Image (cartoon, rainbow, N blue to C red; front, side, top):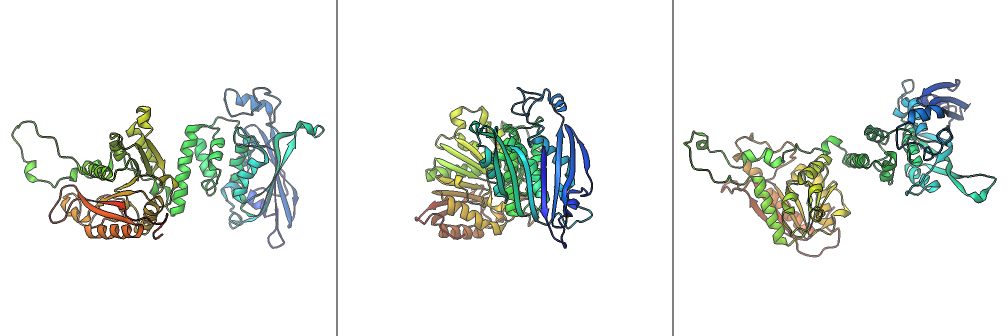
Length: 519
């Protein structure tokens, strides 16, 4: 199994800097032990203008068989037919990927203590592999698959099919290609990370059992490029040997990474799901009614008390359901669905025939799935619900076509400069017939005895509006996107400060061009 990496240079920036990047001296032949054989690193040529480093991996087929016994899936596609005669010692596969990580670990990390400025520099690179399996198995194969994987990363791809036997061209082509990747400006660390991931993807198999820690390895090696790759689903599925539970987990984490990068935020800031209790009932229920000191005095035994008044969270859900019924909505998108409390309420009402729950937090969606017990519901009832990950500050084709959208206690979790993006994504691009928005009434906060003066109700709230501020925002959005808006109080009404929650019901008023309104 053979691979070469070449670069060009000049007297001022010699090509032999490749030796510093790889941490391998151009004047030496070095040998490294791997789990299935020996790896040799040497330089066929090393000069100021051209330098080539070669990795030769000698695989011990006996060790491969012995260590692979009982591993189940993950070996060569031909392994069951020919344990001792197969392509594993010759074709670039997960064996070569593991050798890359073993031999060039520091180079993959971008570490170079002697010349710390080198790893961040892009340089001309040419990578050659004489035998790379490009198996299709339902995903297409051959040179086309190679191009789909490497060209979006900026590589010029030369993939020449290897004939089954050059003496008998009528036999056709094998599943192998001669691969040459070239780039005028690429970082070596990026190239090695991409090869580490994509060589097993092309092969479609691994020589070891794919455990859950492979997800972490994939995301670490794919940092900075995999989340935006157009074939990330195919890459993830094949890298994880089609283990669907791991693939689903990796795809969720990749989507979070993509959204975090787009928003210039940390993943932890976006995936900020609350704990297993519903936020409203964990945070606000003790404050639903102002405290009455008389209630804390000892009481004589009395007849069974009347049912407790509904919590603010329950009153809010009832108000939202009433607004949805009023708008005649049957297909509803719950945007920022959290742990699915509103979805659960809508599931009990047969008038809601299709419900989409969207949240940026994977943990919140997992909690919603558990609480709704979708896998235990009757098939027809469970089919009414779809849970999806997404960010509401980006247009999303999945949101189009719904009768109504709900933003229940969502807008206050956004930084104010990001609010116009949400407005456009919901009111401009998705444009449902009705939109229901609820948000805290900041004026009512003085009635919460446990809330310090000037504080907001939840640690993640970026703002809380007074009734006048919410009205001004709602009327501005309605005018911009062709909606009529009606504001309603939710919860116990105080003559001085209003109700604890304020609700706005938007309904389309005039036809505007699709995607109309300010961006």
